[in-house]
Image 1 (cartoon, each protein chain N blue to C red):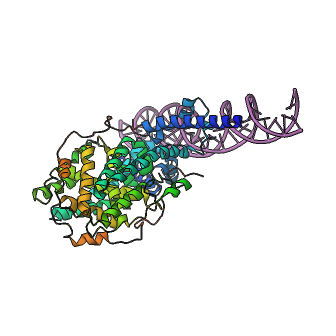
Image 2: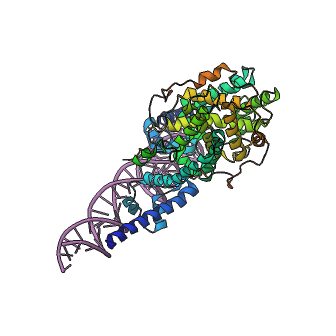
Image 3: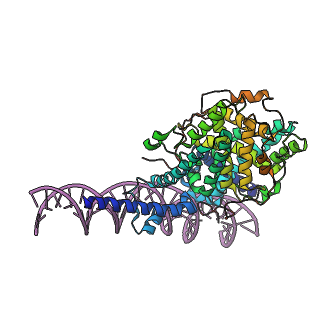
Length: 243
Length: 243
DNA sequence: ATCTGTTGCTGAACAGTGTTTAGTGAGCGG
DNA sequence: CCGCTCACTAAACACTGTTCAGCAACAGAT
């Protein structure tokens, strides 16, 4: 069946072209800037042609994000080689924030928008597997910390601790994405904030003596140059701003 | 000038009617659901009439949010009566999260959207005043904690500590707003998460012995009923969802 | 080689959106 | 009573996402 194969291949090729064109627009200007007509123009097809490959715009963007996000999830699992649960948590937090800063539009859609995540059969199948489910991996690490007696007695609920840790790094990441460059606050560098958050949370929940870690002092040093990471000072408005 | 007064009053009345109609739609269904035509229908005017009172839709919603938000900022200042800086920080965190949960759409627009805050002359004028600038109040509290020797030596940068604390509570709040009711995670109650975050951060940065506070154990207790606060299990999709 | 059906795309439309503009009409000051 | 300002309307414009009838190319079967 060479002809059927070719048809399928051509179909796949166009789908990839659509996704590539959409990724270009999306990563640069965000969800709202991705227009079916703009995509169509970029790939030299008619807007309606896209509906042969995706049910609607939402599915298109979501496919895009999930594809890029899987790379990140798999990367997290590489931290499993770190023996010390607490150190693993610290690294986990840093990697998480890094991904968010490197892919702000993806992160915004997945974790800062209503129903950003959808739970299809494929996703639900991997739920709970620490190698492919980020939250499960985090929870597992917390659980090991608890079992090894590294956390205070009050923090014996792995889910609560995991959710708190997640909230902490999510707060740092999302605040950076949304308000980087805001002149209202004299922002410290994103690295310093990431470090301070992970250190404070680990220190606050673990039994280790405060101040014992040399790393903690590094995080608290004043390094005034704010912004960091991203070059652009201010994210462009989604709709085109006010006139 | 009774007639001119009356004109101004009538003008103000209509503006309030617009804002009230918009608030109703916005608070219930979010930014995207607020349509100028829907507002116009509610107040029995033509869509174009709104442009006589607001430059564009953005300014309308922003006026709405700022007005409601000022009430919150003023409420924060009432916490100034708490003498102990650490205790004040804990209360600050809880109040912050409470406002976010009670006004999710407002919070989403102001703190989870690009350029949610705009810095007009009125806003900039009050910047730095702890009584009217939430961040300044937070920073002041942190500063007092540092000056009273309540924090570890590493956490001597008031801005970094304030930003970390803010990120923590923002993370708890925004995760709740975006993912409340998600079945992926076995969520603890929002109260428990708020408590765990504030406790962990304060404990992680302060010199006080871990476990000394009775409150900490209360926060870590397992209370499985997740969701809390909000009645609706799942936030409606902004655009109307997939079919 | 011709018929038949499927597949993949186009062109045009529909129902929405925010926004602009010309025109209208009521009420005011002189 | 005149003119003028102001607030509003009706209608359009440009832009969305999405649908649908039709068409042309191709596949397999006759």
